Amino acid sequence: MEVDPARRAHALAWLAKARQDCARIRRCLDAAPPDTEDALFHCQQAAEKAVKALLAWHDEPFRKTHDLSALGRQCAILEPALSALLNRLDDLTEYAWLFRYPGDFVAPPEPEIADAQTLAGEIVREASRRIEAAE
Image (cartoon, rainbow, N blue to C red):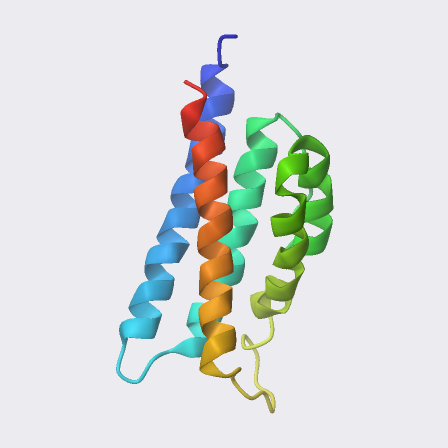
């Protein structure tokens, strides 16, 4: 089956943005002191953009939202093998807004930050594997 070049380009553009967020996560965590708030924000963003890349790849419209639960459910219909991973993404949703405004928030412990980074990386890799393998 021939791949639609426009659809492929659109999905790859979303993946490129997701990878930029992954690079930002690393830079935030490598800073002295680490910028965990921005790192967690970029974990959510990387996951969101990877899921949107998969939806774009399937030519599935999606609404403007940061809700990874909603996007994950939509994507799981098209990529059932990713259901377990997509279900875990909801844990990242609150990082889209949690630290963006003043408040009495406490940064999560290091293991939670590492888990968020790992989860974001997993969905970006899975999206990349599926989209880039279909040439």
